[in-house]
Image (cartoon, rainbow, N blue to C red; front, top):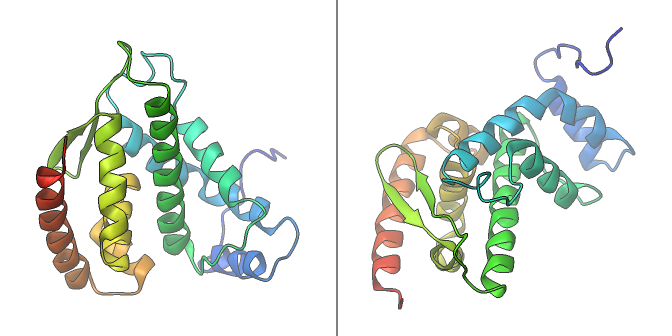
Length: 196
């Protein structure tokens, strides 16, 4: 039997394992991750596809690295995920933290000739971000309404669809669409007025 391949889970089984994670059962997180690992890599691939030249510039950022960094941030902590979609939304938030932490580290080392731009897009709005802009975006996100911030994190940093976000946040798709429009307008205004 190949232990690298997870067994197919019955509907709701990930939810059951996540209940064990919330209850603090040892090893429960390790049991659920193989079943969502490809989803997590998909989230990481979407995010990193927006980072032009990250691998060419030797930063070592790839989907596996981003998933593993996110795992290290959530391992051993209380994880409030109630279902698969909620887990993906939480990991999208953690991936944002990982990328912002990396940007802060690069920024602290001062900007050099080997920097690459980052493009964040959902297909209808694109902004090219260097490290300083990514940090400004992080600051702007912290000023948003919490639900709007979660929606932006899920869209930009997680690549989740409106339906996936609605499921993860327990709201309607219409609410996601409305909050996304408000958040996008506010971020455009904030970032265009932010000092260089």
